[in-house]
Amino acid sequence: MRSYKRQSSLSPLDIENAHIVEIIRWEYSAVEAYKKLMAGISEDPHLFRLRQFYLNHQDNLQYWKKEGEIAGSFETASVTVWAKAVEYFIGVTTLIGDKTALKSILKGEEYALTKYQNQLDSDLLTPLQKSTIRKSLIPRQKRHIDAIEKLISEKQGGSHGSIPSD
Image (cartoon, rainbow, N blue to C red; front, side, top):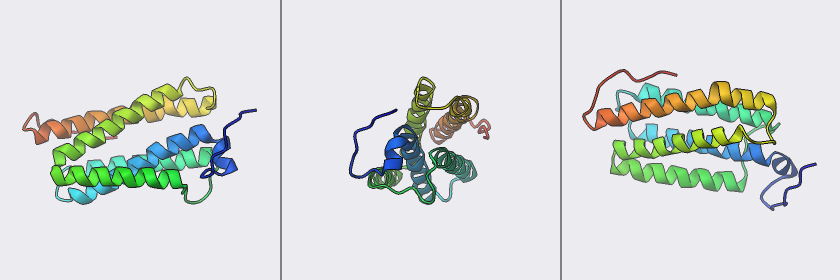
C-alpha cells in the first residue's frame, strides 16, 4: 500500500493518485498557457496550430482525470495557484512579444516531454498508462516542440517551411 503524507489541500482521492495529480497539474497549466497565448496573438497566421496544441492538452487533461478517477472539474488550491502563475507569466511574455511568449511555451513543452519520459520509469503508473505515454503523449510533445521551434524561427525571419501538424 502506498503512503503519502496528507496535505490539507488534497483530498484522499488526490493523495491516492498523487502521481496522476502531478501530471494533471502540467496539463492544466498547458491548457491555461495556450489559452492565454492565443488570446494575446489573435492575428497570428498560425493560430490554428496553437489551437490544435491547446486541444491536444485538453484531451490529455481529460485522459489523466479519467485515469485518476477524478470526476468533474479538477480544482484544488495548488492547481489553481499554479495555473494562475502560468497565466500571469504567459500574459507578461505576450506583452513583451509573440516570440518571447512562444519561447515560454516551448520551455513548458520541453519540460512536459522530460516529465513524461521520466514517468516511464515510475512504478506508480500502469502498463497501459505507460504505453499511452510512450505511443501517444511523447510523440505529440515532440511534434509540438518541433512546430513551436519552427514558429519561433519564422518570427526571427528564418525558414518558412511547413509547420508539422499533430
